Length: 413
Ligand code: ZN
Image (cartoon, rainbow, N blue to C red):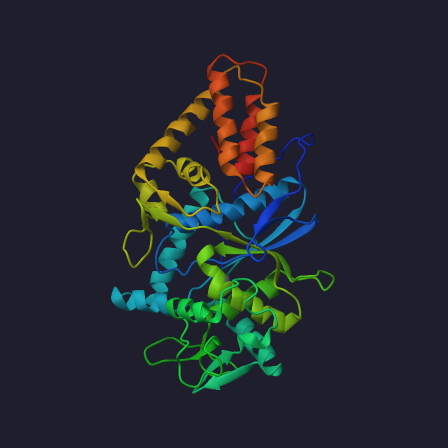
């Protein structure tokens, strides 16, 4: 599938020193240094296109954009792949509810998503792969799991035995009862009659009446969600035999840890004998005015609507970065107002002919980002520099600081 338009990233001065990046690995719940590599392989789960990009999505993709930008700035290459679940139950349910053609609904929301990513200056993935275009790939992955004796059928549907991987459960660290409960809330069906284990997941769903289906060696149907990501990641990220894990970073929102990423890891382990990722990174959730933001509550704030209403995308980006990516946080009018004021102040400072020294603020920004993407500290250092500049500070290079903000924080101010 066509990715979104590329975002220009300016080159940085060679003299800037980049400490090794550390990220909190959801698997160990500790900050770990990301090993130095020439090429990093990063997979981030994409949207199901029944709705446009809400602020929770935006916060997630910004998090991985910061990782992408930092690793590139160190001189490495980042091979970045994202999927789009352009066929799944929620999409069909929304299309039925709104009396729309599911394909047209998906295409319209994918277009909005692409526009939002460009407006927010998120670097596009090298491969942006839809579930529909990956059907052959998924079918092959299901066959490979089948040849390892890990697949069984209930009627015409195929299920994967998650406990085939000795590591199953090691990412989410949940007890089985909690897993069953969450699985049930997030599209699984632990009580389905015929299941060998309640946590086994659907990998191929036979065509239902009035629903689309595609021909495959497993009959006419469509892919399950978890195997879609596993198959796309293992194909398009071109894992190296010499690497200890299939890929370097797997990411998404924290609501994907279980069941989605746990089950992807289990499938990848059975297929390759290795852990799927060296580091699992998860961005926390964004709420609205004290409440969880969710489609069921009907309180989602959409990026495209904010921008249409005149909000500067750079202010949205700044507001989302003003708190740490691992912190569940609230979106409020106050947050937006503060971000607007801070961005205005920084713009004013950058536009001054003479500015306060920039070498140390650049070092502070780089150091903060290297420490598990500490954007609040990076932006606080920037505020301080803007104050010094507007207080008649001298001796800095505004152009150089602008370039750093653009390249590392994605802020074109
Ligand atoms: Zn995924």
